[in-house]
Image 1 (cartoon, rainbow, N blue to C red):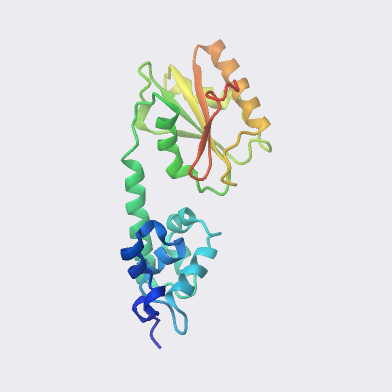
Image 2: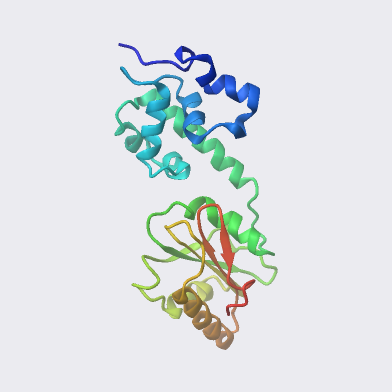
Length: 228
């Protein structure tokens, strides 16, 4: 039996018609996914499939669209065509994020726009350093991973951070790490790490400009908070 298509739903339940009459912002994540997928599985409506697909990725769109093809195919009802549709939409969204990225970091937002697309949905904490030259230009155009894991469980060693800074001949650095929970509120450990790195940087003549905590669509600048 072929899958149930969006057009086979009662008119008031059709996401596409609701999008036209009420606007895309009025639709739920499940309804927007239904428009992308077009059809459900055998004996399953496309809205049901969309809801089940979303729940497989903890209800988080970023995790869904960052999943690889094999992860998508592991969901019952998602074949190669649907997996490719989802990956195409995810790539378009990623390219929209990239349009705001700059290699010259003059504000916390500049750093956050660079880090957030790659860090907001990681399932483990990752600490990165952005080495900057005297004009606040990101050296070699990329952040560098310092450690993977919890900052509480795996204390950051200043020498690991400044080894990178010295190797890149950096004038200053910015730290960034993610909170897998999605909540970017800094922990006591985050503050302690920032203060320790800032102190060592002062001795070496390499200033810590900021430490950003990346959450799900949000970030916190510890420098703006006056925490180091």
